[in-house]
Image (cartoon, rainbow, N blue to C red; front, side, top):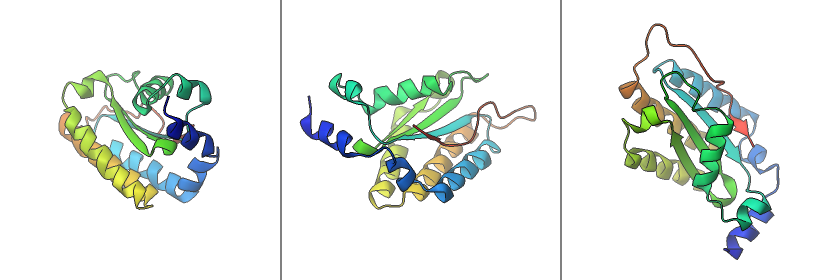
Length: 165
């Protein structure tokens, strides 16, 4: 067990996401997702969580494992073309994870997602939280537009509103 990680997670207060992403930032993120989805046939969600609960920490759950769990909870796998993408932020670890459904993963290399995550993490470290997420959404959007061009019959299958966990 990583005691430093445990202490970090226990020190993060429940309102940390709201402080990191005030209403104006959440509105900008929602608008970026809506604009993004007008350019492609994919579905993008953003979820931020202050910290893992003690049970998950003691079990050694990683940010990646939690992101996959959140992907399922938000039903991103439930899109017609299997083209849902979750951008997940675990504040206590300062870790961004991108989880994409199998339709997207068949077309986008994991190195692409890693590059987007690292760029977003740099923005977060610099305190530009909302801007970092919006920039990440724009980069995800460019990949989705390339691989899943918008069709006339595309519809918004999932909410655009960011999620605070």
